[in-house]
Length: 125
Image (spheres, rainbow, N blue to C red):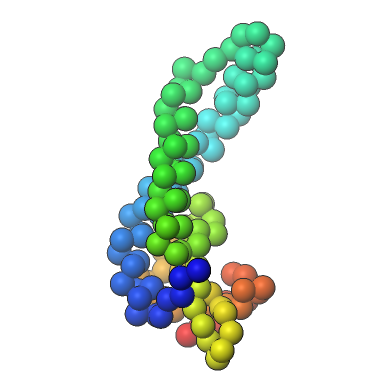
């Protein structure tokens, strides 16, 4: 597992933010198709069905997976697709904690939380 300093995390944000925005947009678009996808899958299981926008949906899922993998390969943890919430593992006072950021915040790390506490336990840096 890669550990980040606050400066290293801040340096990565400009590279990650566009990926998070793309994931968030695609995820929202796919959510609109979820009922149609379920109906098409049920119909297909019964010998019929299909989804006109099925290839678009599948391509979007592929892109979400690809972008998620790119973020994970940087050592960053994607926690919430809809909020663009990410964590950067770091050491603080000798133990592992997470630097926390989400879309809509200032484009610099300002929060951290204990691993077990999650977003609800965020503390100001």
